[in-house]
Image (cartoon, rainbow, N blue to C red):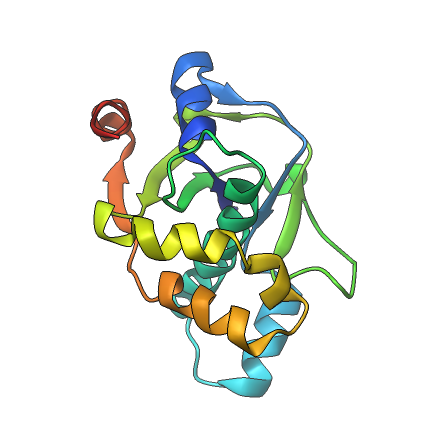
Length: 170
């Protein structure tokens, strides 16, 4: 199953240095719940659009991780990885984000298909969003506007063999 793991630049460094991320981990995927939501709101959504929705949910979760990691660069990071279906369980909490899953095992660097990372131009908007993302989660329209500014930046795509070089540039 393709999953999208929210991360930070420090998590990315751990992945490169240790060759794996230790589970259990929270990620996002095309789950029945995500699929049902889009069936109601956009019946024509195809698999690629659903995967993009899961990636965006992971990018939002990355903001929350950056909030608790003051030494991480102010750039959202999402890792796309392929893990066994048996290692993934949908989060059955009504308060969880759509598409949230738990990965029971480790995720090895070899399981990672790509990394998606904000460019330098997003740092100011991400910094501002990190400070208010929890307020946005609780319904603040002003905070949501700030988060929307960060989410307006497209994440750049990096092949796994480019991650080390990317980290050197941060």
